[in-house]
Length: 111
Image 1 (tube, one colour):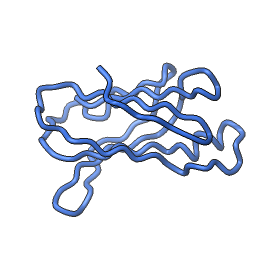
Image 2 (image 1 turned 30 degrees about the vertical axis):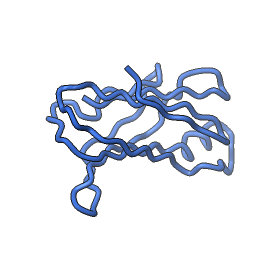
Image 3 (image 1 turned 180 degrees about the vertical axis):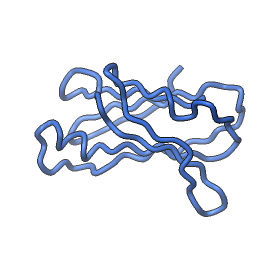
Image 4 (image 1 turned 180 degrees about the horizontal axis):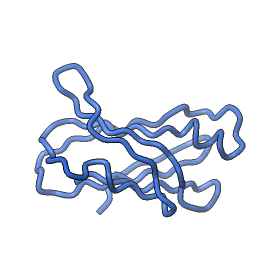
């Protein structure tokens, strides 16, 4: 399972309504395997719902530009945030939180 949680530290609250897409690298191409929108708590838990994980390199891309424009920032600095990570053990839960502001972001492997 791959999940995320997005917090907007400029607003001091969860980033509600942020779109994200999950892709798996196959050779030199990226294949979309999941898409979702953060819920009212900033969580994204449905990206791999019903799908078995495969070992490999994944990319989780967040549409931070649209999110920040929806919150009054007409020209956000970051149009999107892409996080690439490796899945080795498919029985594990991979939680990839994102902390955003209009001018910065941070990601880490959560629990």
